[in-house]
Amino acid sequence: MKYILGIHDGHNSGATLTGDGVVLASVSEERLTRQKNTVGYPKLAIENVLYMAGIAPENLAEIVYASEFMHKGDYLTNLEPWYRVGLQDQLKTELQQNDYQKVILEVRKQDRIATVSKHLDIPAAKVGFLEHHLCHLAAAYYTAPNAQTGKPILGLTCDGAGDNLSGSVSRCMGNSIERLAAINRHASLGKIYSRVTMLMGMTPWEHEYKLMGLAPYADPIRSNAAAEPLRQLLQVHDKEMRFEQVGELSMNYCYEYLRDSFENVRFDVIAGAAQLFTEEILTDWVRACIRETGISDIVCGGGVFMNVKANMLIAQLPEVTSMYVMPSAGDESLSIGACLHRFYQTSGQTDHGDSILQHLYLGAEHDRNAEEKAIADGLHGDLVEVAAPGDIDLTIADLLADGQTVARCRGRMEWGARALGNRSILASAENYARVDEINRAIKQRDFWMPFAPSIREERAHHYFDDPKNLDPKFMTFAFPTRDQGYKDLIAASHPRDATIRPQIVSQGANPGYHKLISRFEEKTGRGVVLNTSFNLHGYPIVDTPADAINVFMNSGLENLALNHYMLRKTPSNATP
Image (cartoon, rainbow, N blue to C red; front, side, top):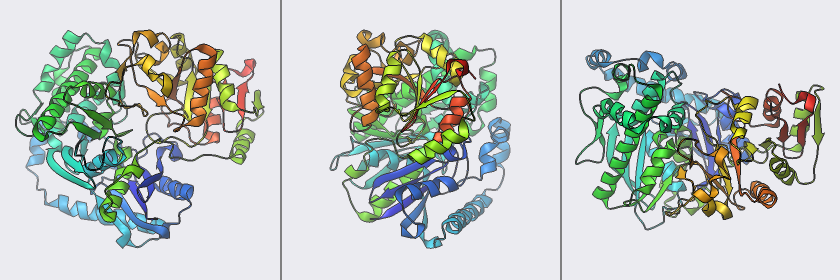
């Protein structure tokens, strides 16, 4: 078997291990360091994926860095000096000599080779690099169920920037990816959204989803008017499949323009304007790409496609026949794309059915010994009942049916930004009061942010329509809810527009979680539960039993389910 290690050493770094095109393990470094969006070389994640697969470094055929160039960590964690800039800064930069960029590129490349060579004690000749947007697209294309052998697929990427591009359009077929158009970094849609995020007092590259969640609260007429300055920045080229600057201002330097344009504009209207503009330009772009290529089956990668509301509108376009969005399409997916593209280019294999992601449970699973040690170390005599029921998932379902909230840390940890049941906080979703209960107990989310539903596959049609068979297993699309099912999931929908970001749970992908929801439905008649990520506010999703118990003991959570044990706080110890 040919083992390939993929590395992303930028923002939210991580590592992936594949064997003959099968994704064996993939982990973000933040889950192991316990520091949100960890930046830099993912030493722990590399060791973790090798350990999970039982692979020694010398058995690796290749190690592939995603992105030909990557800044050092201190640059990526100190955004303000190069975010809060304007046109005058742009003009000064344009006067500088750029020859030094080639020198920096080569120095960083040698530094990155040396880092992994020393860490794994492998020859430098095994280390390679792939371009950023190629990795984004490869992650989407090779894992897509709608990308069938012998059928052309339209591949789209869109993000802030990477390797001097912020987007691309490609024709994909077999193991061939032919780039048809590229969007340079100065015409970046993602940079506009991230700079609005900073302007709103939030954290770029992390809190963009908060703007998306806030947008529906804004008055549509006011949002449309407020979006006009954004339309003066960027547009879809009338003949080519790319975005272009409307004026001379680069999106790298648009912060001051945005600040001046949005002065005295209400906070919700700013969010509404950013979201509306994003939806407009993406749908216009997709229409143009389909028109120019004649290909209506699309796959999408890059951080802008984390915007599930925009994805919903793209999928609704009559021009789109089928659509797949790479799960957790931001830079955390780059290491997956690097592995898969290298495999298919070197193997000559054109059928990539083995790479299709049937599930995202690509992290570690922890044994009874780890749980018992975590219980012994983490409870410190606190009044917590520890039990070992015969079927923990049925026990969870009964607690949920009784109106209780349960944190679940079972099975392999899911990869990516979305909790998909194995590292989740669960509750019944029919009562909106549960939103406040969970926020008070642990999440402390902004009042406007919705939770999401996990829906049993067999009952999905009751809750939303999926006419294009998107099969949203990974929370990559929003959908309007059906009237008949809305009452069952009101606490797991957006309170303003009644849309949902569903996870469809199948028996094949996650038997235990599917059984849990099935039992819950037997007791309540509702085939859906509220699902939110298992973490303290500002921290990564938990990984180990020790992480889970730490969150359990430092929050108002009352029930914790591990692989072998159920923990329940006694009434006197039910709040932190």
